[in-house]
Length: 115
Image (tube, rainbow, N blue to C red):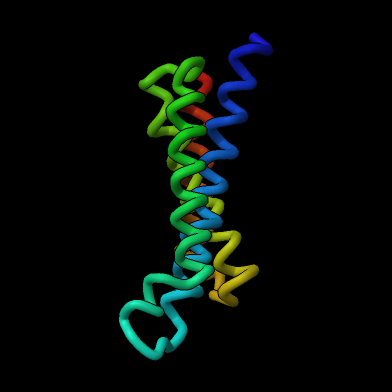
């Protein structure tokens, strides 16, 4: 069981890394650039896509111990990570709808994981 939980942890960390890369891309997109090349070839964009790549590799590796049926359920935790990271780094408001939505996602993940 411990061996399997390592794969679950790797999967959740890969989703978290993916969420971080999405925040970095959003921050990069909110800036003005002098030309199209600078818009796509800057440190933030390259770092974000590198994080996406690392996250993808981790997810593929994690599927060695995570059943395919649980993958999408664990992937949905990314919505929670994005909501939290958006409030912290992008200064977005945590509206009532967002909070209710994330609570429903958490409930769904818990129920699906226990079944």
